[in-house]
Each structure stands twice: as C-alpha cells, then as structure tokens.
Amino acid sequence: MTLEILTSDLLGPIHHGFFTRRGGASSGIFQGLNCGLGSSDQREAVSLNRARVAEAMRVAPAGLVGVHQVHSPDVAVITGPTTDNSHTTDLASDTASGPASDPASDLASNRTRADAMVTKTPGVALAILTADCQPVLFADHEAGVIGAAHAGWRGALDGVLEATLDAMEALGADRANTHAVIGPAISQRAYEVGPEFFEDFLQQDPGHARFFANGEGDRFLFDLPGLGLHLLRQAGIGQADWTRHCTYSDPDRFYSYRRTTHAGEADYGRLISCITL
Image (tube, rainbow, N blue to C red; front, side, top):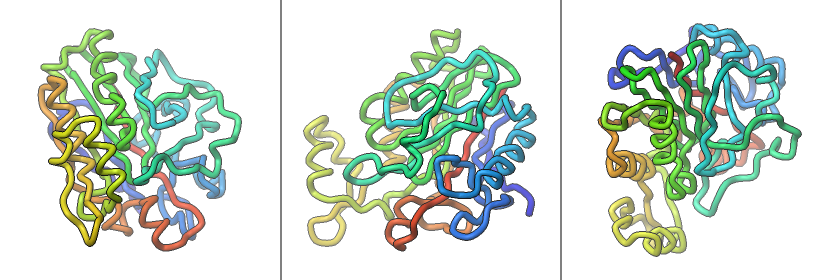
C-alpha cells in the first residue's frame, strides 16, 4: 500500500509530511506504518517503515533524525545526520494524569532527551513521533530554518512551542515570518479529563478555561490543539494552523494511545511527522 502523507500549504515550499499509518510493513495491533522503536513491534518492520519514510522525505536513512521524547520544553539543535537513528526511543503518548509509561523507555538510548528540534542544515529530516500528542512542524522558508516539536499537554504548558521559536530565531529565523502546522492529534470531543486536570490548568492561568467544555458528570473535554494554536499565536508566530485530523476518531489512519487504552490492547503504534530543507 502506498504511503499516505498529509501536507499543508501553510508550510509552502518546505518538504514535509504528517504520515498516517497507511502503507507500512507492521502487522497485528501495529498494522501499518508504525515508526516507534519504543514499541514492542518487530524491530525489522519498524526499521523498514522508517526507511520508507526517509525515502519519501528524500534523505538517507541516517538523515531521519529524532530525539528521546520526554514531555519537556527542551530543544535540540541538529547540525547533521546521526549515525544511529535505529536506537531512538520515544515517549509518544499523552494522558489526563501525565505521561504514559513507555514499554521501551528503560532501554539505553544515545539520543538527546528533548521534545523539539531545529536546524538550518539541508539533508536532515526532523522526525517527531506521536500517538495523540501534537506533532508541530515549523518553517521560516526565507531564512532556511525549520523546526519540529512533540507537544502533549505537559510540554505545551511548560513552553516547548515557544522554546522552538526561540531556538529557530537563534539560527536566523524571524518568528513573524515563521509558519507552524499542528498535525493529527486527539481532538476535544475525544479527550475527556477529570476535574483535577481542569483545576491544575486554571491554577496556572484562569484563561485556560477556554480550552475546556463540559462533559458527562464531573468530566471535561480538553482542546489540546486549541491550546497549541493559542500558545503559538500568543508567542508571535506569523501563521499557525491545525490539520483538523483526530487521531482517536480515525483508527484506519492513525494510532492513538488513548484509544488503545480504552480497547485494552497491550501496545500501540507511533505516527511520524517530518520536515526537511
């Protein structure tokens, strides 16, 4: 099956893609393009999936660069391809109470612990893994600077999106000329949280109430992409948008940590989102 790659006109001439699960070599509960070596999927299948992504992004396999994602505001500056992308592990989920435990999070990894990357180096594809959290791709095509961020609720609140813009400007970008697109992520209608989650957000900023709607009983529905767009615009970005694809609601196209949890499945695949100069 052919890979399905979602793109946005907002990122203009910059080569990028939000890959769905279609077109991969994985089977069973990972059926499709699972790119997370932190999953319990067969390593050979995941490596083949990642090789297909690298080819689609027009980079060598070593040019598909990722980080060890830990729900932080930390940003890595990428200056060239890495020599061992096969050992990247990931924390790609997002829950109401905090980061989920990753079955491979205790594996040794030589990847930098961070949740965003920036570069001005051609031939490098910045790759973010997600399974409900926001994959956010950034580009200032005039300055030739790009970025990619993994933004769950914790990373977003801690400033990973603003930190990505700061790091891009350190490489010569201008946030007023920078565009960002949030890819497939869990939507508000599927993101039910408890009252403690709601209160924690309001303690940080009462204005965050705008990102919650009433659910059943004492539950709330949280708008993660709405928060992401608000933070990007508040930070002074030129333009920002969300592709409006919900990972939870479309199992044929997207992996979802929360859907997997509700179904009682043992593990879940990871979607990949990439950008390259």
